[in-house]
Length: 148
Image 1 (cartoon, one colour):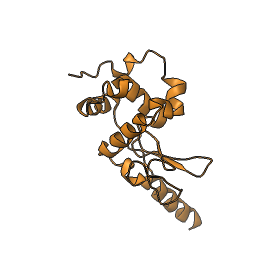
Image 2 (cartoon, rainbow, N blue to C red; image 1 turned 90 degrees about the vertical axis):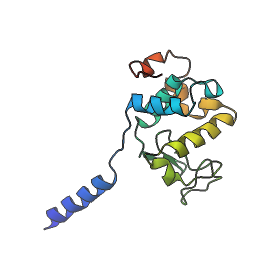
Image 3 (tube, rainbow, N blue to C red; image 1 turned 90 degrees about the horizontal axis):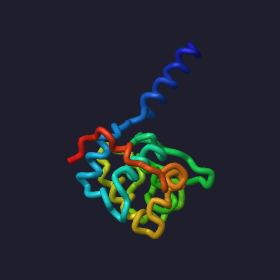
Image 4 (cartoon, rainbow, N blue to C red; image 1 turned 120 degrees about the horizontal axis):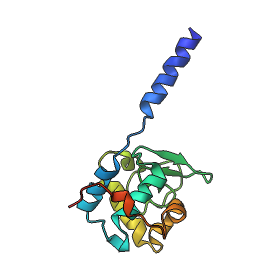
């Protein structure tokens, strides 16, 4: 009976924490529709690289940081400054609940990311983008996506 209870608990945990992944080209098309190609000087390839290195295209990703804050969604937007998760201290500059960054409607995440870009350092605000994307050829990120 104990093994059955453990299996049930594990099944519930997995069911509520499954990844919701968006395909690379579907994201590229959405970002293009939202006029992000060239926004603040960044290409669609920069955006796709950012989503890849931050969340592996997982819309529902939540990551706890050592400072007690959390990163949310496809762009891993931090709760300390940008959104309110009602857990960590938040400036909530984007005026959004962090949980709203985890939905398949990516408009909230896109609008918040745009605010982050406009606050000084652009995509350099994301350490993983600086490490894995900045200054590298990135055009392959949109290869085969048939963007119009």
